[in-house]
Amino acid sequence: MTKPVTRKNLMKRLCGFATISIVLAACAGQPQAVDDENDPLEGLNRAVHGFNHVVDVMLLRPAATLYRGLLPPPVQEGIHNLLSNLTTPIILLNDLLQGETERAGTTLTRFAINSTVGVLGFGDPATEMGYKKHGEDFGQTLAVWGAGEGPYIVLPIFGPSNPRDVVGRVVDYFTDPLNMWARNTDRDGFPIARGVITAVDARAYYYDAIEDINTNSLDPYAAMRSFYRQKRNSEIMNSEDIKTKAAPNLSFDFDAPSPGDEELTEAR
Amino acid sequence: MLKTRFLFALVLTLSLAISTTPSFAEDFGKKAETFIQTMADKAMATYRSDKDEKELELEFRNLLNEDFDVRAIGKWVLGRYWRKATDSEKEEYLKLFEDFIIVTYANRFKDYSGTDITLNVTESLTKNDQDAIVRSQIIRPETAEPILVDWRVKGNKNDELKIVDVLIAGVSMSQTQRSEFASVIKRNGGEVAGLIDALRSKTTQLVSNVNKAAN
Image (cartoon, rainbow over all chains, first blue to last red; front, top):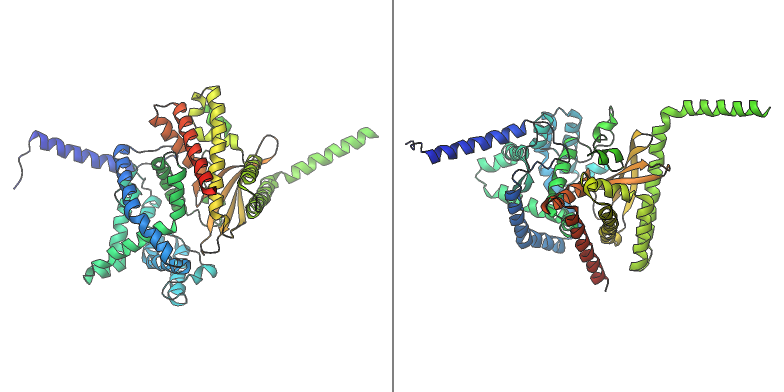
């Protein structure tokens, strides 16, 4: 049953098609300059940001406050470690997809140490042994492969993102062996429960930073947008690594404009 | 006699200058590392002492003006709107910017003052002999994961070291503020005056929060 193509329908389809091509074209581009806000959907994004803030105030923030009040700090730390130990397969896969064999080795070693000596990942003795934690996900892999980030998007509940990271999230979800296991054994509750605990843990872990932005910022939406873009860029560059052996400057972008560049400020 | 001695001294100085040129950048990195560690130790000592609110604020303001290039940061944060601003707007903006920075950072420090945090400089990367990044870790007793803080240090015209940016876990505070201020100006019809009003009311609100908390 195909619907007759009315004028209105055709317009709708064309609009949808145009939107998709714009999104994809934007994704293929070069890395964004830090000053470029690239936020064509700002109006919609601000509305979703407002909605997320309400959800945060009504649900997530009270949950995180309770969590921090009820559990002693070592237990919170333990749960945080446990959750990050569970993300090992995703980190390992993306280390490999990015050709970072040394980091893949670290990821494996950490998993072996923390799952045994660290009692199923509750502790993190690997860090003390010199195997430091790092994150990796498919959004970062796409960036390393040359995909641009595309316009800024605020997702309901999930918060700040962009088309590249949306694709990354979906791929991460489907490539995670734990989720595969849950799907194959009809444990639908598992990914949901894990998602909820991860959200509460993250909100509690970054409690002060989030409160800081909400209290001190003149425009929390714009602050979050800049924060998210910079955080992702720093994660993609793996700049948490202490001095990469061959080219130390690669882990920090010295050429980005910075305060003190008088002529730059004046020239614009 | 005097002339030959002068010539000798000149040649010696020149040859020294030439032989040390390649390591100037590295020297700057080392100097910057010491500078940051000293600054952090000073700040921590201030907060551990039992001074009252007013004294703390004054010391914090001195520390900030001594070690940070507040003017350069303020100017850069305003970005392309700096040129658009009138002279009186520039003056008022810079004054408000300093007050705003003082109250926000004083709050941040206070949040941590109860806990025994330490800052350790780990290394530095140098761009040239006047520009370096000093990397450090802030260690908190209650969590194993340290916070990674990078300090952008530049030498100014008078050869003094000044902090021009602080990056927390790779996120530049100056860059974040720059985008934020640009957004506020844009939403106020492109007028710097709109930002000045917003800065003034925010600072007043934050100061009154601090005073409420203190009483």
